[in-house]
Image 1 (spheres, rainbow, N blue to C red):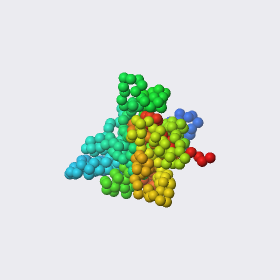
Image 2: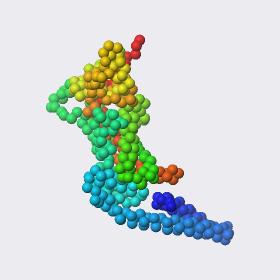
Image 3: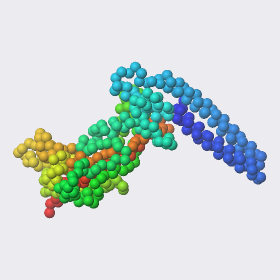
Image 4: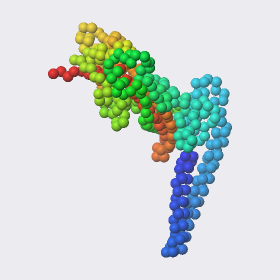
Length: 380
């Protein structure tokens, strides 16, 4: 039997055809050149389509009534569950199922997942606050930059570039920072850049266990967000309008060179002002790090068992997309989500449900002078 969603789609399609035939029938009725046979043929078409519509509507109303009855029977889906974690999983699973199946969400589930109200026009389905907080704030294994970045979910975020001030106008002792603030101002404003993450959910997953469903959807969403963040932050040829997110965008960040990778990185660390050097970290490719320790070992000393922080001199985060090592104080780098909404659909060909998360976000460096890019000087 078709799903409720498919019946709604069929009703909409046939309803449009009935409306079109009705419009054509009116036009024929006032057309003096139209014959009685023309009018009769259109009336027969309309009656046929209307009969089809009535059959589908009856099926739709019956299925909708059955689903409402089931919904009423399990209105409090978390009743009897004592463990808060299990209760949260059950609430998330009910939210996802209700969203993709086009049915109402119970009040107890709304409370548990903190579902905010939509806008006054009802156009936006805002993603539940609790679920958004987990997506935004829990570390992502696949976006290593989150291990060093500041992450937030604040609407219309504005931040001071330096969190303190002194009466003395010359209190900033780093000349590069002073020039940057004079050129760009003392506040950084985060904008809204829209993108979508689409999750395909099979019928078997929808009707599987709560744990399987929530893990599948949340892992897919987290992977999508992580991939987008990392791609924008480390793009060597960023898309139009997104260039400010990339560490490799033009000359925004000062580049420091050396005869090899190790010297380039240590030179970059040394080139940082002491205000940033103290908390500096290094983001680089693991393959580049292996090149460094191979050269340092030189067949006599084994650096392979030495922690990367001791070799480089600062904490290291390995990211394969970091084509040149990035050195800096990542307290001045933030990823911010302004809003998230969701929508659902169904692929009639594959039978998969689609859960689509739309996010508006930005990532910015509040001070480019807190960072350096390490480069190897080409050998003459």
